[in-house]
Image (tube, rainbow over all chains, first blue to last red; front, side):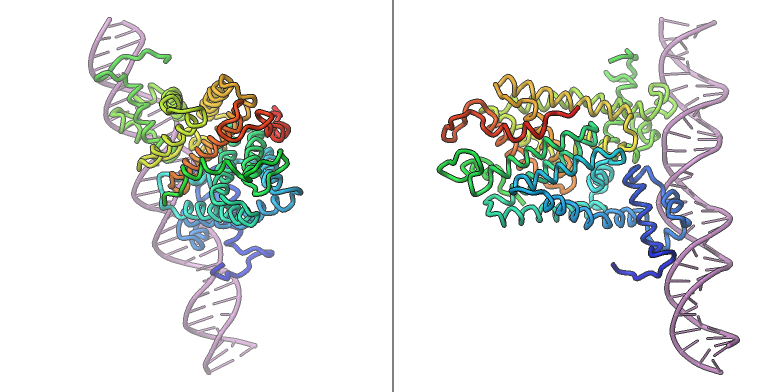
Length: 223
Length: 223
DNA sequence: TTGTGTATATTTACTGGTCGGTATACATGG
DNA sequence: CCATGTATACCGACCAGTAAATATACACAA
C-alpha cells in the first residue's frame, strides 16, 4: 500500500512472501510461540532481510493482521449475500458457513481475537489496534445492513451479533465443537427476527417490536 | 487438593504461594510471556524449588487454572443469586456485575479463554482441558437453573448464554469497552424472557413459547 | 558503450539475553 | 540416617535484534 518494492520471484514481492509466511505461522502457532528466525526460514529469506522490510517483530505482527482485514470482511459479506431468504436467515448463514470452516482441522479461531488475548498485557500494541478496527468495521457493516432493513435498534443489534460471533469463536476454539456456532446462529436469527419492523411469520401482534424497551435502557452506550 | 505439603510461612504452603504467584503473572502477562524464573522470584523461592513442586511449566499452568475454577464459578453463582427479580434479571445481573469488574484497570479478560487462545496450537494441553471443563460446569449450572424454572429448551438457552458471556469477554478485552457486557446482558435477558414458560409482561399469546421451532432444527447437537 | 554513483536488497556471522529444565550439593527436621 | 526441601550454578536452545559486507539494479555522464 505504501512502498512499491520490486519483484523478486514470480508475482510476489519479498515483503508479501514474508507476510504470508508470518500469517501462516502466527495463526497456526501463536505470536510469541513463533520466532522471527522461523518466519524468515519459511519465507525463504534470512532474518536480516526480514528486518530490512520490517522494523520489528511487532510491525510484522501488525502487517499479518492488516493483511487479514479486508479478506475476512469480504468473506463475511459473501456468506451473508450468498445465503437465500430473509434477513434472519442471511445472518444465520454467516454462522453456518463459519461452522463449516471451523470444522477444518487447521482452523484455530479468530486470529484477531487470539492475538488480542495473547497481547492483552500490551494494550497499545499496533496489532491490537488493527484488530479492534477490524471488528468495528464488521460491526458497522452489520449496523448499516440492519438500518437499511428498517430495524430500529440497529446499533444494539449489531453489537449483539458481534458478541455472538466472537463468543462462538472463543467457545468453539476451547471445546473444539463447531456446533456452538450453529447455536449462535440460531440465537442471532431469533434476535434479528424479533427486531424486524414487519412481524415475521408468527401470529401478528398489535405493535411491531414491543420487546425493544427493556434492553435499550440498559445499554445507552456510555462512551 | 492432592499433596498435603507442609507450611512454610504464615498460613500458606510453598506450593500455594507458587500457584498464587503464577496466577497473578500468567493472568496479567500471558503464559508464554512469563518465565518460570519470574514466577519463582515472585513466590520468593528459587527455580529449583519450583521444579520440586511442579514437574513442568505446563503443570504449573494447569495448576493456575485449576485454582481459578471453583472461585470463578462461585462468583457467578453469587452474582446470580444476589440480583433481585425474575430469572431474566438475575441472568442479566451476572453480566452487569461482570461489566463492573471489567472496568477495573487490572482486568484482562477470562483467564481460561486467554489461555486456550494462546495455547491453541496444543489442543491436548492439560490447561485447555481444565478450561473446557470449567466452561462446561458453568454451562451445566445454567442449564439446570433454566430447567428448574420450567424452560423447555434449557440446553440450547444455556449454550446461548455461554456464547454471549464468552463473547463479551473477548470483545471487551479487544475494545476495552465494558459497555458490551451490558449489551450482552440485555440480549441474554431477552432470550431468557422469550423462553420462559409464562408469557412475561408482553401481551399473552396462545402458545407459551412459539419461537422455539426455528432454532431447535438448526441445532440438534451433532456430537 | 563504458564507467561511476547511489539506492535498494540480501547475505553471513554475531550480540547479549532469556528460555525451560537440570546436576549437584547442602540444609533441616523426623 | 533419611526424606523433604532449598540453593548455586549451569545446560543447550532459542530469543529479538544488529554489524558489516556485498550483490543487484538503475541513473547519468563520458
